[in-house]
Length: 166
Image 1: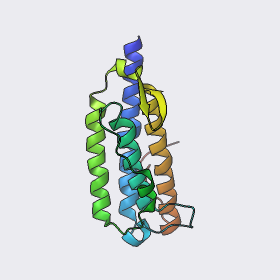
Image 2: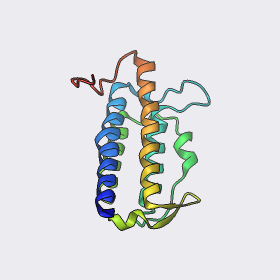
Image 3: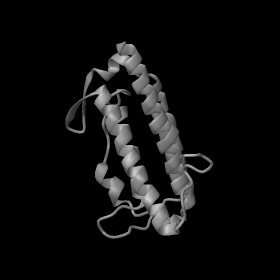
């Protein structure tokens, strides 16, 4: 029973993170010009470019240092200090490489890893909590990216295009 729950949980994380979040982030980047990618609505808000760099740093820190066994070399402040413009193609490549990297780590996670405890970003977390954090944090920022696209373009993202959502 426990392995069934673990398998279901891992399947849901896979669907939400890799099946929904990454494609939506890629679509958001693709819908904006390089100038729009690096524009900030105001001084206390981030650009889409900053969100991409932040997601890369956060997910590599949380999944890479826990399940991946890597050293924590994250420089969080630089994720927000970058003002670009890094080319759109570069950001899309970063996202693609990040997805490939995280999928490789994710595929090696075993059910027993979910109950282990890990030290990450000053917190002591279970593997289950690490995956919940990564997924909800990624989704949160993809929501911000979606809002930026709609605000800057006046267009819908079409995430649910062709689906009957009742």
